[in-house]
Image (cartoon, rainbow, N blue to C red; front, side):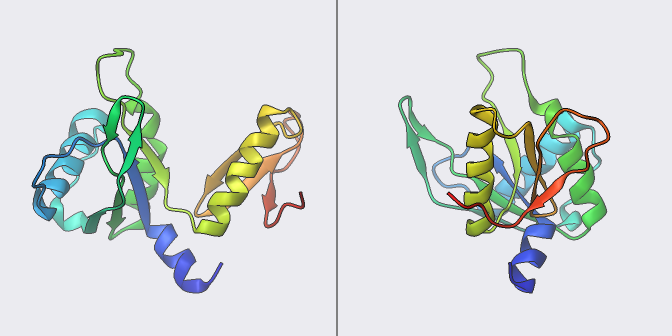
Amino acid sequence: MTAMEHSCSNWSHVPLGVPTQRFCAWSSAIYKIISICRGSLGVDLESDDIEFVKRIRRKTNANGITPPPIIVKFRSTNLRNKIYGLRKKLRSSNPDTPRIYINENLTPENAKIYAQCRNLVKTKKLFSTWTFGGIVYAKLSPEKNEKPTQVIKLYT
């Protein structure tokens, strides 16, 4: 990972599933993010806390069009980490409510490594995997004293 890629991924998140309007201005995307942070996460976020917001490519699914992901760059890593830590509060028990996810903005290489690690967890070759600060980590067993391993490359 280059220094620039690490810097960008270290300051930003990718919220998925944030509803969009046909003509969604940059400022309305910021206010949707602020509304979600204040209402669902309990974080007092101001527009000055966000450096930029950008919607990226559209995805489609079986039900039609899924709202395109948004990259949000925060001015503070402490605020970014606070929001990332509270992301599980966005899980709703109501199936009629649109689901919103917050993921890290990984480099393409780390996104591929993380996808491979998740597949290894599904096949029980790894115990768990996660990302933090743009870095992929894994554990081989459920042992509490096992330290996480940083995954740099997988040989397949």
